[in-house]
Picture 1 (cartoon, rainbow, N blue to C red):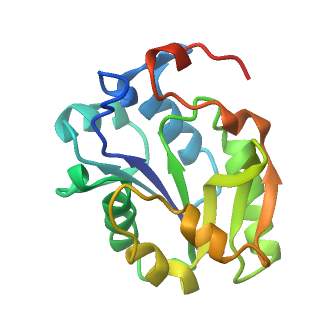
Picture 2: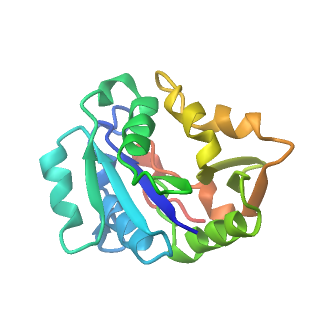
Length: 190
């Protein structure tokens, strides 16, 4: 399957007070860690959406096969980054796996499990399951691209996942419940 992977990394991390993309996790930044794991997975294309301090963030991607897309509207919220990521995809992409850069336990193995589930069930959305609810990383088939690009404001793709609830496939990932939103989250165990 020709699947792309988009990493959303454009925000300014207001709640944290400093760019969460640059938070150190096991000797590397969250942005580099997420991109490195994504590049180690089976996705045909890896796109990192940048906005806030884009030039500084781009430096974290040196040597990786990821390419970047700039989101000039990053202040609008996460929906603008989803739109920018989808717009940057190769027209031949059969689907997109959307990731965020603040889940420190992301791994290429989990990404590959999501992509394998998507390949086994063509045309269906696949989400990570943690905290009793589906979430990102999540795979969206091409048929849902219009729904993704219709998102506005600071609403992520959960609404699109919710619209698929009867057909949604989930892959357990308890570690997904850990994300970095504030200083207390740094160092949170699985």
